Length: 123
Image 1 (spheres, rainbow, N blue to C red):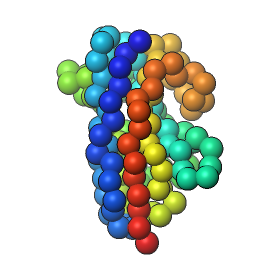
Image 2 (cartoon, helix red, strand yellow; image 1 turned 90 degrees about the vertical axis):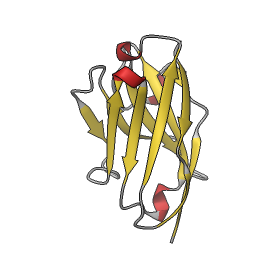
Image 3 (cartoon, one colour; image 1 turned 30 degrees about the horizontal axis):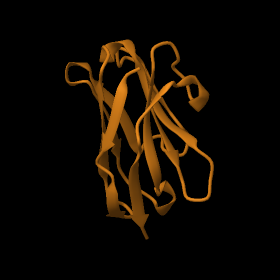
């Protein structure tokens, strides 16, 4: 499986921006569809965004649509999540996920996961 390492989390005020990165290694990155999920405190894991193998297709959870942008740089083996207009309800641990065959919003479909990066949005 591909190894994933997230970075870029931190503390930001409401209305601010952060960019998360997920660096992949160990396998051919372009063979993997990628996604971001998050785990808010006291809640269940939820889908945030996904991007197809080539990067030509993306989709988002309704809660982040228009504010977050997922992108990938296959040459650099990295996927990004640009988060703008952040809200306190975006506070969560954000996880990067990858799979060679699955491209969707169900976390069960992704077989490779990073360790997570914390995002805290203060009001």
